[in-house]
Image 1 (spheres, helix red, strand yellow):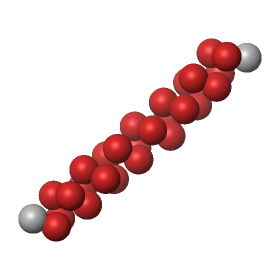
Image 2: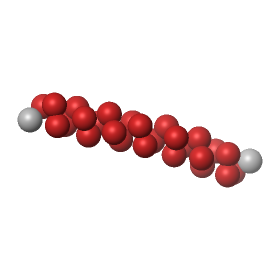
Image 3: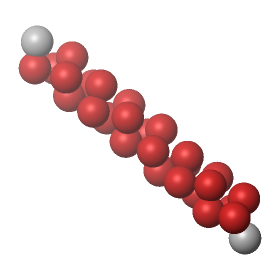
Image 4: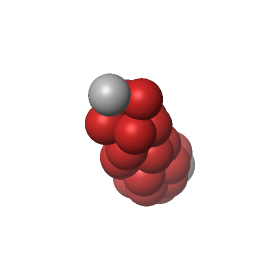
Length: 28
C-alpha cells in the first residue's frame, strides 16, 4: 500500500516540477 502511494506521488511530483521549471524559464 505504501509503495503504491509513493510511486503515485512521484508520478505527480516530477511532471509538476517540470511544469514549474518550464514556467520559470518562460518568465525570463
